[in-house]
Length: 183
Image (cartoon, rainbow, N blue to C red):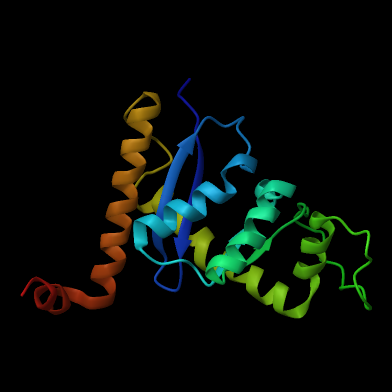
């Protein structure tokens, strides 16, 4: 039986470049990593995202507070799922009227995702983020790591991310664009 890892990452669209990729053992939830993922992505790319799309594993009071601070400091608008839907379940329409004063931060973010702009923003995850993980798993055989241990898995995932980013850059600029950068 092989080792299993849970992959956590930050992908920048529309180029689908990987800003941060990190494996952890599967029982670990994403909760403590919301701020870490976005901070590391900004450090790796030198740019703070205008928009962050986080799945339900990151939804916690601490991450929502960090998202509010990031909005103030860097202008990043965060859309974070507050729960999971089954495959057949449809998203309910947003309730009309003002948000109740006693609503928690998780209830507020769930309501934000139910709005038309929230749905449109979060739907981009399917076109920007998810294909990247599929491409790494399928095209680069990323579902089976050759190196063992945390350091080995981390190093192999970083190599896969670098190769993925180079493929995306090459696909965008081609050989002439790479030659111009080199000159």
